[in-house]
Amino acid sequence: MWAELARIGRDPESGGYHRGGWTPAERAATHWFTDQCASRGLRLESDGIGNLVAWWLPPSPSRSSVASRQPVDKGIVTGSHLDSVIDGGAFDGPLGVVSALAAVDRLRAEGFVPRVPIGVGAFVEEEGSRFGMPCLGSRVAVGALPADRALGLTDRSGTTLRAALEASGIDAAGVGPSPLLERMAAFVELHVEQGRGLVDDGAAVGVASSIWPHGRYRFEFTGEANHAGTTLMEDRHDPMLTYAMTALTASEQARLAGARATFGRVAVEPNGTNAVPSKVTAWLDARAADTAAVESLLEAITRQAVERAERDGTAVTVTAESVSPVVDFEPALRDRLVAAIEPVVPKAPVLPTGAGHDAGVFSAAGVPTAMLFVRNPTGVSHSPAEHAELDDCLAGVDALALVLKDLAS
Ligand code: GLV
Ligand code: MN
Ligand code: MN
Image 1 (cartoon, rainbow, N blue to C red):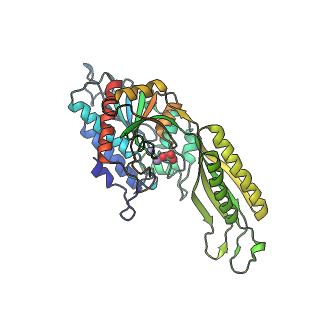
Image 2 (tube, rainbow, N blue to C red):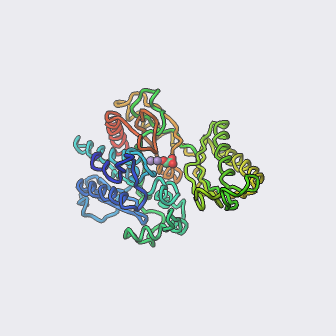
Image 3 (cartoon, helix red, strand yellow):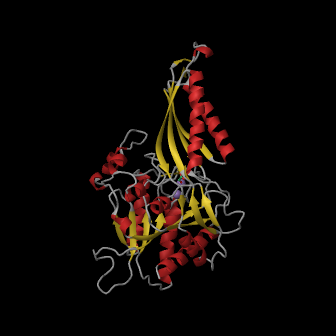
């Protein structure tokens, strides 16, 4: 499975993945997934925006699994996402999907018979790399993002989500809160760890305690386009300078607060070598251990950006594009996972993460949710260099199979 999926959407030069939501590569990965589910006789269900859950149903005298159209009873859902950040790694998302299918195969091979359905999920546009909204599919599914706002989101070329869905043959009228949610008695997402959290612990697999809150903010710096050769330095109103100082401030403030601040995306207009720009748009990703810390970080960065804009004769506006609250996973379920995986990972470490996940969205919506992390030996993620060792990934499958067995018995 890994070898097949690893070929889809990979840039041969960088080795990174380009699987933005509803792009040909992401659609190919999704088709790969639906084929895998069909070959296992799982019953595939999709919601309006295209989130997928493929069910392994317990035997029932009144139901002939795949063929029956009876509603699925509440079950345990596992899985992750198949989309990627721009030039992302192979593991972020796909590891959870492949491990879920592998865990189902393992349990079937052992002759395990689930008491409740087990669902393997693939949720769309988790990274928000195309439409800017993290966890787009799950946010729409739980009703946290209204359909009209979602459908109006645009990608970098101005294509709306509505148009992208229609181009993929998906009727935009169906976008909205998902019936799949009602079937989720619990959700367990396995994911590659995205820092060096498990390296010092010497553990192949860990269990998540919480997800840091985070926000994505659009900073628009406007100034005055002018000639690079003739405009005296003191006559300029250069928004690039205001932006540059804001990026330095963001780093400094985040360091002081023990938080994270990143400007990873910038658009310059008109983007010419020999012109002072008229506008710089830059996106801040800010994260910290609690919401108050994210808010005060944003406030400090904004204050200094405004002060610098006054000096530069430029203007700055700040717009929150998405805000995600802190997620504390249910302690009882978390502890149950630690106990369940004891045979594979004795005394599994419990750790927080600064990365966002669909698991956080489902948890905030009231679904009992937990996460397993597979060790990342370098801590590098959102990069072609992201890696996990095969043995650790196999331990992840073992651990996930134990968890599913425990929860579905
Ligand atoms: C998603 O992986 C995020 O944390 O941005
Ligand atoms: Mn990611
Ligand atoms: Mn992910």
